Length: 229
Image 1 (cartoon, rainbow, N blue to C red):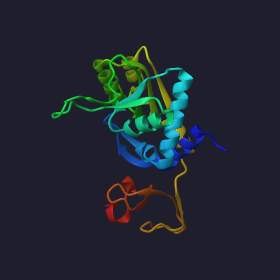
Image 2: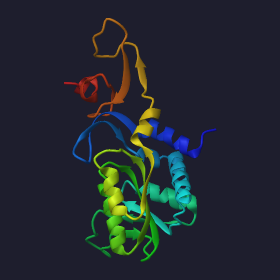
Image 3: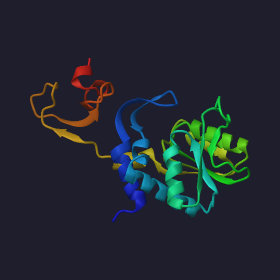
C-alpha cells in the first residue's frame, strides 16, 4: 500500500502535470505546467495534502500556531493542514489591502507574535511566497518555516525564498522533476485524425489550449484540428 506521500505524488502527476507550451510567472516559457489546485481541491488530494504537509511540519519540529500563504494557491493547502491537524489555525494573505470593511490584508487567524509556517503551491520565481513572508512579518507573525508543494527548481526561486525566509528554513514537498518522472501521459494508439501517415500513428493525448478538446502533442502548439492553423 503506497504511503500518503507516494499517493499524493501520483495524484499530482495524474491531475496536475500537463505537457505543452506554457507561459510562466517568470516571463519565460516551459514545455510543462503544474496546476496544483486540481490536486489540492480534489477530495482525496486535499486529504493527502493535509496529511503530507503535517508530517513534514512534525518532521521539522516547527510546532506552528498557524499556517498561511498568499491567496489563492495557498488557500486549499491552508485549509487541508488546519483540518488534518485539528489544532493548527489558518490565515490567508491578500495580494493587496482591502479597499472596504476593515481594510486588513491578513484574513483568518490574527495573533501578533504567533509562530507561523508560510505555504505555497508552486515555487517558480518565489515571488508569491516572498510576498506572503513579508506580509506575515509586517503583521507581527514570527515565521518559523516555509513550505511549497512543488518546486520548479528554476528562475532563482529557491534562493529568493531562502533569502526572504532566513533564518527560517524552506522545504519543498516535491520538485517538478519528481512529478514529471511519475507522469504517464494518456496515449492514443492508431491513426490520429488530421495527421497524414502511411502507418498507424502513436501520439500523446493532450488538451487544446484554445477550446479544451482533445489534441495531440505532436501537433503545433498543442491544439486540436479546428485550431491547428
